[in-house]
Image 1 (cartoon, rainbow, N blue to C red):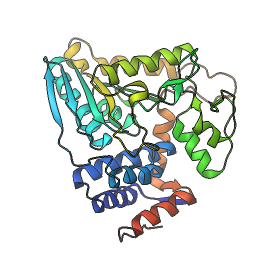
Image 2 (cartoon, rainbow, N blue to C red):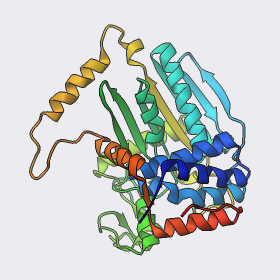
Image 3 (tube, rainbow, N blue to C red):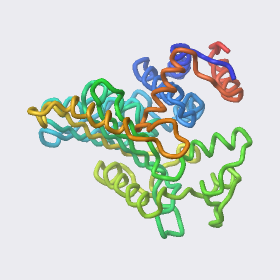
Image 4 (cartoon, rainbow, N blue to C red):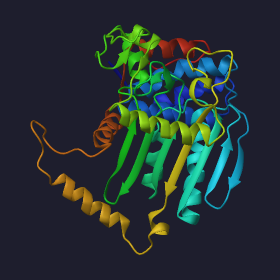
Length: 347
Protein backbone atom coordinates (compact mmCIF):
# COMPACT_ATOMS: atom_id res chain seq x y z
CA UNK A 1 0.00 0.00 0.00
CA UNK A 2 1.12 3.52 -0.80
CA UNK A 3 1.86 5.87 2.11
CA UNK A 4 0.61 9.46 2.29
CA UNK A 5 1.45 12.31 4.63
CA UNK A 6 -1.27 13.59 6.96
CA UNK A 7 -0.95 17.13 5.60
CA UNK A 8 -1.22 15.92 2.00
CA UNK A 9 -4.51 14.12 2.62
CA UNK A 10 -5.98 16.98 4.66
CA UNK A 11 -5.09 19.51 1.98
CA UNK A 12 -6.45 17.41 -0.88
CA UNK A 13 -9.73 16.42 0.81
CA UNK A 14 -10.37 20.01 1.89
CA UNK A 15 -9.70 21.24 -1.66
CA UNK A 16 -12.23 18.76 -3.06
CA UNK A 17 -14.94 19.95 -0.68
CA UNK A 18 -14.11 23.60 -1.33
CA UNK A 19 -14.39 22.94 -5.06
CA UNK A 20 -17.89 21.58 -4.35
CA UNK A 21 -18.82 24.87 -2.68
CA UNK A 22 -18.00 24.23 0.98
CA UNK A 23 -16.56 27.13 2.96
CA UNK A 24 -12.85 26.61 3.70
CA UNK A 25 -13.25 26.52 7.49
CA UNK A 26 -15.84 23.76 7.24
CA UNK A 27 -14.02 21.86 4.51
CA UNK A 28 -10.89 21.88 6.68
CA UNK A 29 -12.78 20.43 9.66
CA UNK A 30 -14.37 17.70 7.54
CA UNK A 31 -11.01 16.77 6.01
CA UNK A 32 -9.28 16.77 9.42
CA UNK A 33 -11.98 14.48 10.84
CA UNK A 34 -11.48 11.89 8.12
CA UNK A 35 -7.69 12.01 8.36
CA UNK A 36 -8.03 11.63 12.15
CA UNK A 37 -9.77 8.29 11.54
CA UNK A 38 -7.10 7.15 9.10
CA UNK A 39 -4.28 8.27 11.41
CA UNK A 40 -5.62 6.23 14.32
CA UNK A 41 -6.18 3.11 12.22
CA UNK A 42 -9.96 3.47 11.99
CA UNK A 43 -10.15 3.13 8.21
CA UNK A 44 -13.94 2.76 8.25
CA UNK A 45 -14.16 6.41 9.37
CA UNK A 46 -11.15 7.68 7.44
CA UNK A 47 -10.59 9.22 4.01
CA UNK A 48 -12.51 6.33 2.44
CA UNK A 49 -15.64 8.34 3.39
CA UNK A 50 -14.72 11.25 1.09
CA UNK A 51 -16.98 10.08 -1.72
CA UNK A 52 -20.19 9.58 0.25
CA UNK A 53 -19.86 12.90 2.07
CA UNK A 54 -19.30 14.62 -1.27
CA UNK A 55 -22.33 12.87 -2.77
CA UNK A 56 -24.57 14.02 0.08
CA UNK A 57 -23.34 17.60 -0.39
CA UNK A 58 -23.61 17.76 -4.18
CA UNK A 59 -27.05 16.09 -4.19
CA UNK A 60 -28.39 18.81 -1.90
CA UNK A 61 -29.01 16.46 1.01
CA UNK A 62 -26.52 18.41 3.15
CA UNK A 63 -26.44 22.21 3.34
CA UNK A 64 -22.73 22.60 4.03
CA UNK A 65 -22.70 26.32 4.75
CA UNK A 66 -25.92 26.58 6.77
CA UNK A 67 -25.82 28.81 9.84
CA UNK A 68 -25.70 27.23 13.30
CA UNK A 69 -28.33 28.37 15.82
CA UNK A 70 -27.63 28.10 19.56
CA UNK A 71 -30.31 28.01 22.26
CA UNK A 72 -28.88 28.38 25.77
CA UNK A 73 -30.51 26.33 28.53
CA UNK A 74 -29.31 27.51 31.93
CA UNK A 75 -25.66 28.19 32.78
CA UNK A 76 -24.28 24.80 31.76
CA UNK A 77 -26.37 23.68 28.81
CA UNK A 78 -27.27 24.51 25.24
CA UNK A 79 -28.90 22.99 22.18
CA UNK A 80 -27.62 23.65 18.67
CA UNK A 81 -29.76 23.52 15.54
CA UNK A 82 -27.21 22.54 12.89
CA UNK A 83 -29.48 23.47 9.98
CA UNK A 84 -28.51 20.28 8.13
CA UNK A 85 -24.90 21.37 7.77
CA UNK A 86 -21.86 19.08 7.78
CA UNK A 87 -22.00 16.88 10.86
CA UNK A 88 -18.31 17.24 11.63
CA UNK A 89 -18.46 21.02 11.66
CA UNK A 90 -21.57 21.17 13.85
CA UNK A 91 -20.13 18.58 16.24
CA UNK A 92 -16.78 20.37 16.43
CA UNK A 93 -18.43 23.68 17.34
CA UNK A 94 -20.76 21.99 19.85
CA UNK A 95 -17.91 20.17 21.61
CA UNK A 96 -15.93 23.41 21.89
CA UNK A 97 -18.98 25.12 23.39
CA UNK A 98 -19.37 22.29 25.91
CA UNK A 99 -15.74 22.82 26.96
CA UNK A 100 -16.27 26.58 27.32
CA UNK A 101 -19.32 25.99 29.54
CA UNK A 102 -17.31 23.51 31.60
CA UNK A 103 -14.51 26.00 32.16
CA UNK A 104 -17.09 28.49 33.42
CA UNK A 105 -19.32 26.20 35.47
CA UNK A 106 -17.48 22.92 36.01
CA UNK A 107 -19.58 21.01 33.52
CA UNK A 108 -21.02 21.76 30.09
CA UNK A 109 -23.64 19.89 28.06
CA UNK A 110 -24.50 20.65 24.43
CA UNK A 111 -27.01 18.78 22.28
CA UNK A 112 -27.24 19.02 18.50
CA UNK A 113 -30.18 18.43 16.17
CA UNK A 114 -30.56 18.76 12.40
CA UNK A 115 -27.12 17.27 11.80
CA UNK A 116 -25.46 14.57 9.71
CA UNK A 117 -22.92 11.77 10.18
CA UNK A 118 -20.11 13.17 12.33
CA UNK A 119 -17.34 10.64 11.65
CA UNK A 120 -15.09 9.28 14.38
CA UNK A 121 -16.39 10.39 17.79
CA UNK A 122 -12.89 10.66 19.30
CA UNK A 123 -12.22 13.57 16.93
CA UNK A 124 -14.22 15.65 19.43
CA UNK A 125 -13.26 14.13 22.77
CA UNK A 126 -9.49 13.79 22.35
CA UNK A 127 -8.75 17.51 21.75
CA UNK A 128 -10.77 18.42 24.85
CA UNK A 129 -8.84 15.92 26.98
CA UNK A 130 -5.56 17.28 25.63
CA UNK A 131 -6.66 20.68 26.99
CA UNK A 132 -7.54 19.23 30.39
CA UNK A 133 -11.26 18.46 30.14
CA UNK A 134 -12.96 15.11 30.63
CA UNK A 135 -15.09 14.68 27.51
CA UNK A 136 -17.99 12.52 26.36
CA UNK A 137 -19.48 12.44 22.85
CA UNK A 138 -22.33 10.40 21.41
CA UNK A 139 -24.58 10.33 18.37
CA UNK A 140 -27.57 8.44 17.15
CA UNK A 141 -27.46 6.82 13.73
CA UNK A 142 -29.81 5.45 11.04
CA UNK A 143 -31.72 2.30 11.95
CA UNK A 144 -29.46 -0.71 11.37
CA UNK A 145 -29.37 -2.52 14.73
CA UNK A 146 -31.92 -4.73 16.45
CA UNK A 147 -32.31 -4.16 20.16
CA UNK A 148 -31.95 -7.16 22.43
CA UNK A 149 -34.93 -9.46 21.97
CA UNK A 150 -36.41 -7.48 19.04
CA UNK A 151 -37.10 -9.04 15.64
CA UNK A 152 -36.58 -5.80 13.71
CA UNK A 153 -33.94 -3.05 13.90
CA UNK A 154 -34.77 0.17 15.73
CA UNK A 155 -31.58 2.07 16.63
CA UNK A 156 -28.38 2.60 14.72
CA UNK A 157 -24.89 1.60 15.79
CA UNK A 158 -24.97 4.71 18.03
CA UNK A 159 -21.31 5.58 18.69
CA UNK A 160 -19.87 6.68 22.01
CA UNK A 161 -16.51 8.20 22.91
CA UNK A 162 -14.88 9.39 26.09
CA UNK A 163 -11.47 10.95 26.63
CA UNK A 164 -9.87 11.52 30.04
CA UNK A 165 -6.67 13.53 30.58
CA UNK A 166 -4.04 11.52 32.45
CA UNK A 167 -1.29 13.97 33.37
CA UNK A 168 2.05 12.98 31.82
CA UNK A 169 0.42 10.01 30.07
CA UNK A 170 -1.64 10.02 26.88
CA UNK A 171 -5.36 10.57 27.52
CA UNK A 172 -7.52 7.50 28.01
CA UNK A 173 -9.74 7.33 24.92
CA UNK A 174 -12.71 5.12 24.11
CA UNK A 175 -14.31 5.32 20.66
CA UNK A 176 -16.81 2.57 19.94
CA UNK A 177 -20.04 1.61 18.26
CA UNK A 178 -22.73 0.03 20.42
CA UNK A 179 -23.02 -2.76 17.87
CA UNK A 180 -20.59 -5.69 17.78
CA UNK A 181 -18.93 -3.91 14.86
CA UNK A 182 -19.37 -0.58 13.10
CA UNK A 183 -21.20 -0.88 9.78
CA UNK A 184 -18.35 1.04 8.18
CA UNK A 185 -16.13 -2.01 8.69
CA UNK A 186 -18.70 -4.21 6.96
CA UNK A 187 -18.86 -1.73 4.10
CA UNK A 188 -15.05 -1.79 3.81
CA UNK A 189 -15.14 -5.61 3.63
CA UNK A 190 -17.78 -5.43 0.90
CA UNK A 191 -15.69 -2.96 -1.13
CA UNK A 192 -12.64 -5.23 -0.79
CA UNK A 193 -14.55 -8.43 -1.62
CA UNK A 194 -13.78 -9.98 1.77
CA UNK A 195 -15.89 -12.14 4.06
CA UNK A 196 -16.85 -11.00 7.55
CA UNK A 197 -16.94 -13.00 10.81
CA UNK A 198 -20.30 -14.79 11.26
CA UNK A 199 -21.08 -13.01 14.54
CA UNK A 200 -20.88 -9.50 13.07
CA UNK A 201 -24.31 -9.30 11.48
CA UNK A 202 -27.58 -10.95 10.52
CA UNK A 203 -29.13 -11.05 7.02
CA UNK A 204 -32.62 -9.68 6.33
CA UNK A 205 -34.13 -13.07 7.23
CA UNK A 206 -32.43 -13.11 10.62
CA UNK A 207 -29.67 -15.60 9.80
CA UNK A 208 -25.96 -15.15 10.63
CA UNK A 209 -23.95 -14.31 7.51
CA UNK A 210 -20.34 -13.97 6.39
CA UNK A 211 -21.40 -12.08 3.24
CA UNK A 212 -20.96 -8.32 3.79
CA UNK A 213 -23.54 -7.49 1.10
CA UNK A 214 -26.18 -9.58 2.87
CA UNK A 215 -25.11 -8.02 6.16
CA UNK A 216 -25.61 -4.52 4.76
CA UNK A 217 -29.10 -5.53 3.62
CA UNK A 218 -29.77 -6.95 7.08
CA UNK A 219 -28.77 -5.57 10.44
CA UNK A 220 -26.11 -5.71 13.12
CA UNK A 221 -26.54 -6.78 16.75
CA UNK A 222 -25.60 -4.92 19.95
CA UNK A 223 -22.37 -5.84 21.69
CA UNK A 224 -22.94 -7.75 24.92
CA UNK A 225 -26.61 -8.43 24.17
CA UNK A 226 -28.82 -6.49 26.63
CA UNK A 227 -25.89 -4.34 27.82
CA UNK A 228 -25.07 -2.88 24.42
CA UNK A 229 -28.78 -2.57 23.70
CA UNK A 230 -29.32 -0.51 26.86
CA UNK A 231 -26.39 1.81 26.08
CA UNK A 232 -27.66 2.32 22.51
CA UNK A 233 -31.06 3.32 23.91
CA UNK A 234 -29.42 5.76 26.33
CA UNK A 235 -27.65 7.42 23.40
CA UNK A 236 -30.89 7.49 21.38
CA UNK A 237 -32.63 9.27 24.26
CA UNK A 238 -29.84 11.80 24.83
CA UNK A 239 -28.79 12.52 21.24
CA UNK A 240 -32.16 12.04 19.55
CA UNK A 241 -35.11 12.57 21.88
CA UNK A 242 -33.63 15.23 24.18
CA UNK A 243 -32.15 17.39 21.40
CA UNK A 244 -35.21 17.48 19.15
CA UNK A 245 -33.49 15.48 16.41
CA UNK A 246 -35.09 12.51 14.69
CA UNK A 247 -34.85 9.15 16.44
CA UNK A 248 -35.38 5.48 15.65
CA UNK A 249 -36.60 4.65 12.12
CA UNK A 250 -37.36 8.31 11.34
CA UNK A 251 -33.65 9.06 10.81
CA UNK A 252 -32.47 9.35 7.21
CA UNK A 253 -29.83 6.98 5.83
CA UNK A 254 -26.58 8.49 4.61
CA UNK A 255 -26.21 5.85 1.90
CA UNK A 256 -29.79 5.07 0.89
CA UNK A 257 -31.94 8.17 1.38
CA UNK A 258 -31.29 10.88 -1.18
CA UNK A 259 -34.77 12.34 -0.93
CA UNK A 260 -34.58 13.55 2.67
CA UNK A 261 -32.25 14.92 5.31
CA UNK A 262 -30.75 12.70 8.01
CA UNK A 263 -31.62 14.94 11.00
CA UNK A 264 -29.14 13.18 13.27
CA UNK A 265 -28.61 14.21 16.87
CA UNK A 266 -25.42 14.40 18.92
CA UNK A 267 -24.72 15.07 22.59
CA UNK A 268 -21.53 16.34 24.22
CA UNK A 269 -20.55 16.57 27.88
CA UNK A 270 -17.38 18.23 29.14
CA UNK A 271 -16.17 18.40 32.73
CA UNK A 272 -13.36 20.64 33.98
CA UNK A 273 -11.65 18.86 36.91
CA UNK A 274 -10.06 22.05 38.21
CA UNK A 275 -13.47 23.73 38.50
CA UNK A 276 -15.44 20.73 39.76
CA UNK A 277 -12.83 19.64 42.31
CA UNK A 278 -10.42 22.56 42.83
CA UNK A 279 -8.84 20.98 45.90
CA UNK A 280 -7.66 17.88 44.04
CA UNK A 281 -4.76 17.43 41.65
CA UNK A 282 -6.72 15.38 39.13
CA UNK A 283 -3.76 14.98 36.78
CA UNK A 284 -1.50 13.53 39.48
CA UNK A 285 -4.25 11.19 40.67
CA UNK A 286 -4.80 9.95 37.11
CA UNK A 287 -1.05 9.42 36.74
CA UNK A 288 -1.09 7.28 39.88
CA UNK A 289 -4.00 5.20 38.60
CA UNK A 290 -2.42 4.69 35.18
CA UNK A 291 0.90 3.70 36.78
CA UNK A 292 -0.86 1.10 38.94
CA UNK A 293 -2.66 -0.35 35.91
CA UNK A 294 0.51 -0.43 33.80
CA UNK A 295 2.26 -2.32 36.62
CA UNK A 296 -0.29 -5.14 36.49
CA UNK A 297 0.99 -8.46 35.09
CA UNK A 298 -0.29 -9.11 31.53
CA UNK A 299 -2.58 -12.05 30.93
CA UNK A 300 -1.81 -15.01 28.68
CA UNK A 301 0.19 -14.09 25.62
CA UNK A 302 -0.08 -10.32 26.03
CA UNK A 303 3.16 -8.36 26.22
CA UNK A 304 1.66 -5.63 28.44
CA UNK A 305 -1.58 -4.11 29.66
CA UNK A 306 -2.95 -1.57 27.18
CA UNK A 307 -5.17 1.29 28.27
CA UNK A 308 -8.12 2.54 26.19
CA UNK A 309 -6.84 4.40 23.14
CA UNK A 310 -3.20 3.46 23.69
CA UNK A 311 -2.92 1.28 20.58
CA UNK A 312 -4.61 3.97 18.47
CA UNK A 313 -2.19 6.58 19.86
CA UNK A 314 0.75 4.37 18.87
CA UNK A 315 -0.73 3.97 15.39
CA UNK A 316 -1.23 7.73 15.10
CA UNK A 317 2.37 8.43 16.09
CA UNK A 318 3.69 5.93 13.54
CA UNK A 319 1.48 7.18 10.72
CA UNK A 320 2.23 10.82 11.47
CA UNK A 321 5.94 10.09 11.16
CA UNK A 322 5.90 7.53 8.33
CA UNK A 323 2.69 8.12 6.40
CA UNK A 324 -0.87 6.81 6.21
CA UNK A 325 -1.36 3.61 4.18
CA UNK A 326 -4.27 3.69 1.74
CA UNK A 327 -5.83 0.74 -0.06
CA UNK A 328 -5.63 0.78 -3.86
CA UNK A 329 -9.40 1.20 -4.22
CA UNK A 330 -9.37 4.25 -1.93
CA UNK A 331 -6.52 5.85 -3.89
CA UNK A 332 -8.39 5.23 -7.15
CA UNK A 333 -11.59 6.79 -5.80
CA UNK A 334 -9.73 9.86 -4.53
CA UNK A 335 -8.05 10.26 -7.92
CA UNK A 336 -11.46 10.13 -9.64
CA UNK A 337 -13.05 12.56 -7.19
CA UNK A 338 -10.19 15.00 -7.64
CA UNK A 339 -10.26 14.72 -11.43
CA UNK A 340 -13.96 15.69 -11.44
CA UNK A 341 -12.91 19.07 -10.01
CA UNK A 342 -9.66 19.46 -11.89
CA UNK A 343 -7.60 18.47 -8.86
CA UNK A 344 -4.70 16.05 -9.03
CA UNK A 345 -4.44 13.50 -6.24
CA UNK A 346 -0.77 13.03 -5.32
CA UNK A 347 -0.66 9.27 -5.70
